[in-house]
Image 1 (tube, rainbow, N blue to C red):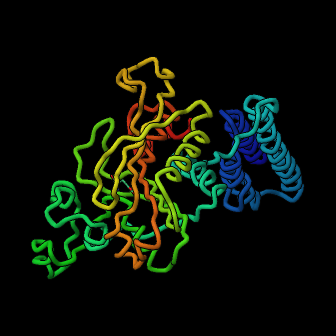
Image 2: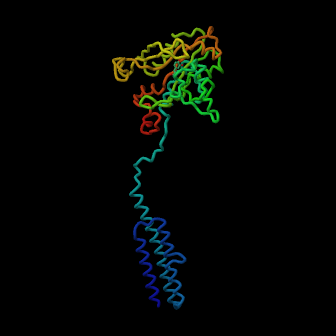
Image 3: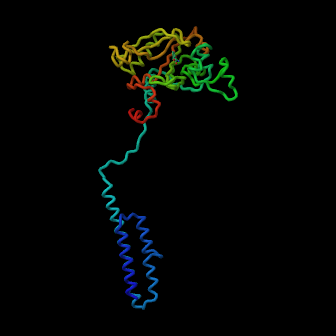
Length: 352
Ligand code: DAH
C-alpha cells in the first residue's frame, strides 16, 4: 500500500518534470503547471487524500517524501522560468542598438516657405493680415471692380456655395452669394474697413479655383497678397519693394522686369517677371528659353477700388500685388508637381 502511494508520487513528479522541461516556460505556463501539480486541487494533493488509510509511520514517510517533491518541483519551476528569461534576454537584447527614437513632425513646406516670405515682408514694415476663405461675391468681385460679366465669375472658374433654401440667390449673381474665395484680393477691402492710410500689409492664405488638376494646377493653392497705400506712392515704390523681396528669397543676382497687364482692380496693371534662377538667363525648359519667369501680378490700386475702401484717390495712391506661393516654392525647391504639396505623402513631406 505504502509503496503504491510512493510510486504514484514519483510518477507524478516525473511527469511534472517532463512538462517543465518541454518548451519555454513563460510566466503563464508556470502558473498553469503550479495549479496542475501543486495547487489545492492539484495532482500531488490528490495523492495526499489516499494517505488516510495508511499507518501512522507510513503516513509520515509518505508525507515527508510528498513535501520534498513539492518543494523540489517549485524550485524546478522557478529555475526553468529564470532560465527562459535569461535565454530570452541574451538573444533579443543588444544594448549597443540605439533606442527607438520618437518620430518628430515638422512644419509643412508651404508653411515653412510662407514664414520665410513673411519674415522678409516684416523687415520691410509690413503687417500680416488674415481673413475668411468663404467670401461673398461682393467682396470677391464687385468691390474689386470686377464687372458682373467678367469670366472669373463663371461657374467654371468659381466654387459657388449653395445656401440652404436660397438656391435662387446663386442663379441670380447680381445678388451677393457665397464663394470660396478665388484670390486673396478681397482681403484688401476687408483690411481697409478697419484701417486708414498709411498701410503696408500682406495677406497669406488659401484660394480656390474650379480647375482640372495637373502638374501645375490645383483646385486650392496659396496666394500672398500685398497692399501699400500712402501719399505719393508710385510704380517706383512697387518695383523697389518687389525687387527687394525677390532678391531676399532667391538671391542678390535676381533681376526683375515689369510688363503691362490687366487686372480690373489696378490701373495701370503689371505682370512682374524674375530672371530665371535655374539657367541664369541662358535659356532652359523652366523659363521656356526666355530667361524670364512670370512671378506675380501687380499694379497701382484702381481709383474705384480706393473709393470702395473709403480712401480719397486724390489724396492717396497705392500699389497692390498677388503672388502664387506654390509656384515660388516649386521654383525654390525644384518641385515639378504642385499636387505633391497637398498629397499628404510622408515620403515627400519628410524631405523638408
Ligand atoms: N488676384 C490676382 C489673381 O488671383 C492677382 C493680383 C494681381 C493681385 C494684381 C493683385 C494685383 O493685388 O494688383 O490672379
